[in-house]
Image (tube, rainbow, N blue to C red):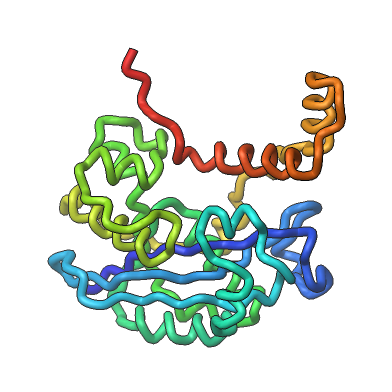
Length: 257
């Protein structure tokens, strides 16, 4: 058996979508756009959870015309860097070859990566049935290992620090995050952790209702009322970036009071 520890980086920039009509109807509901994969990182583990092979590919964007400034800030990936990548169909084919084994199990940190991998494959009209059928979501098991409820989903960076794993690479890089996830898997693994069978149709059907989104003009309006002046374009971008960076949770710390 091989474990394929997977991590993805995404771009989602609705203002630069190339052609909305190209998106299959089952992938879009009102204002919900697909998250385009721009990097696939993974490590292959043997039965003893030793890393035996890495996988790291950049994907040239084909859904959105420009990468979001927030994504560049978060990942360091620029439009120029991604333009040198390969088309998703090529990267997907290479990943299938990398993970191809009858007993391979996909391991992820949270279900988003798994769901979006299937959605991107469907969007590009590729055969999603070639992906490993079984998966393990390592995130809730790590929460339990740290004495929390499995429903309290902790961030990758927090768990890495909490379990004393050496931070040798920056976070928000697909390959490095896959390596960190593999190290966490080694820490929390026990024989009771068994793979589950993934059903993409059921996952889409049971997807959560559309989340509320930020009314950015209203937020800016509130700032302008507070300061009794108009916000400059630079200030607006700082506010937008601060909002998105805050949502990642990477700047939260334990209150020791």
